[in-house]
Length: 272
Length: 87
Image 1 (cartoon, each protein chain N blue to C red):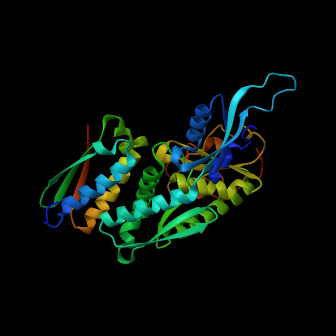
Image 2: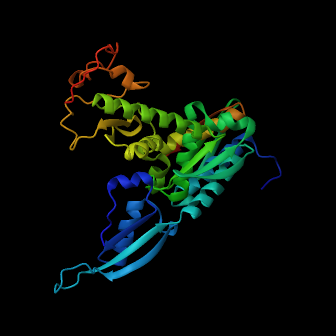
Image 3: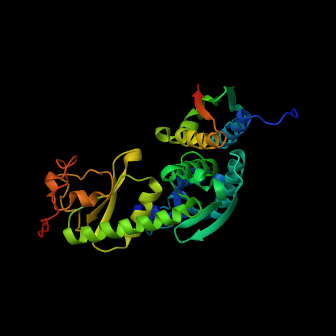
């Protein structure tokens, strides 16, 4: 069996994959690399010693197939220990509660007066804490496999509802205008959430563009291979950019990058 | 160690030491030097050559996060803290 997951499924957080290789080690290293976690954080199940799906009569290929399952609860408890320790060393007295949500596990820090310090401006401290705790728990090259969030006083919960609203808004707009719509640059966790939210929304498609901290989500109309609409890629702007680009023909999008937003009066009704 | 209560620099040293040890592969080689001034504290973090990338992270993200957390806890003590990663 070959792993049949689509690349997009990563967005939902892979907790289980099936990998094959010529040897046990080869399969294992490949799988761990895909998941981006260390070996002690997965359960390994050997499914077969050789590839079975060969043509009748053909010589069986040598190989091993493994199923790797991420130990989510172990990761959560380790992350919680690290977080507790870090907060103590920061001189913050706090309680940590574990919340389970459909989009992952949340470690909620209840810090009373120090809540603002933990969240930081625009949630920056929370983001830094999240980054460090994940690195500390799952090791170096993690590819955001673990859907673990760190929250304080439900700041992120509120942030999520803001993002949900933003995603709905953008999707409505794209469906109406048949033009792509760039959102502002966001951290990976926020981008993933937008992708997840719009994954099952018909008529729209999401991709990320840009580099590193400036990566942003673009919501595009779904029409096969995104219909050659790449002549003028939209650039992200500060704030919610769909307001700024409203009504702008796509090929002129780059010229309206700075300064006056084009008038929102004429809404084009033609599709491509 | 001694019975003297941990100084402010010491607390930050412990914080950086703890986080760095969890980040790197060779935790026994993590060293943190503290240079304490009246209003500011400089921390020098030294890790094994192969581990430098782990504490800096992709595009300096981990180093940035370390500095954020450090300055957050320094704020609590009304001090400025500076983290330097030395080779």
